[in-house]
Image (cartoon, rainbow, N blue to C red):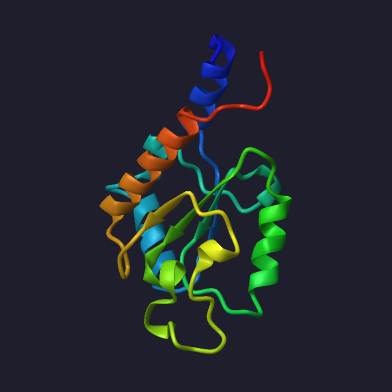
Length: 147
């Protein structure tokens, strides 16, 4: 990997713009992660509302079959390179609603999940660990282009 790729990956790693889908209680816990004393800004994480300017999608709760096309549409609007984090048991396995006919039990079947943050809801410290994991994946990313 050349030095310019290292610079690009360093910049991407230290400036993450997540697109949050605050569904359920994990979305509320995500807000706690963004406030003091955790302050997600100090990790270079700035929540963003526009999918065209985001590089990480956060799935923070259960997804219904009716909402799945909207999530896929948001995912397709995000520019490359992009990553996805599933937060909480509802996003990972359906949570307490796993046997419902209308809940997606495995989000990874529909979106390429890069990091799973388990918990119901996860503690803010687990958010930090999950974002550090995604930053490591971004840093190790191999680009298709040669510089």
